[in-house]
Length: 283
Image (cartoon, rainbow, N blue to C red; front, side):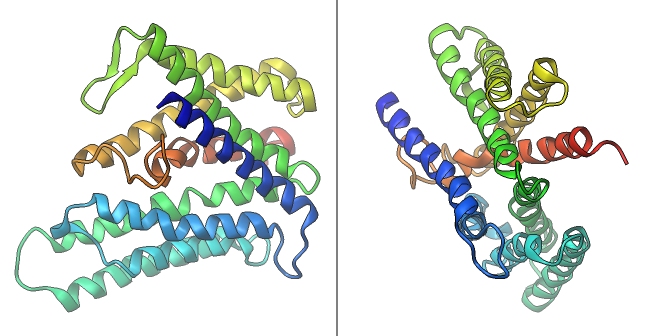
């Protein structure tokens, strides 16, 4: 199990590095960062499929509507600069209206289903469509260092995951959230936080990312790492509520796509806001 997890984890890390490096060398007219675009579009198709399968059938939202809303949110990143947030509001409102239209058309008089389906639609599009927008926006923050900023956004929460896994496995004694994730321990949490901070400090020492030096790097690692832990627990709520251990079995040693990206989904907005303030200065 550990060997599989390490091997697949290394392959995923190389794939992520390939996306970042590829976008520095691949040029597609009218489409900046085409590798990131393709990666997000793929996630926008596969992620909703996993999430919808986790939801109970009576309150499961429309299959076509959720992926369409997610893909439109992700594609909004490549609209003219400065328009992404307005487009996200427009798409979110459109999804809400469309969800009500679907429920009006399909309403059969059965109580307790229509409103939960509308709410699940909005949740799914927000979770898989809005949160990943911050990956692209982090990449767009800097023409020269955007890849490094995005690498930090991914490496810190995943480093937190790795350190938490091994610390919890060998030293874990006190359960952190036994009903949600029985294997998580407070010892693993502490090890993960320290590991995430160490990853940020190590990257800063190598590349000089943070104006505040090692202290700011450590603070970034702790803040983004904590957001990643929250993202992990948030996905656990969805899985446990759907009576599932993993989002799927698509990725050996990890489960599904959502099990891989759960921590970075919530880490991305925190990292983006950190870089927006520290690298450009407060507005």
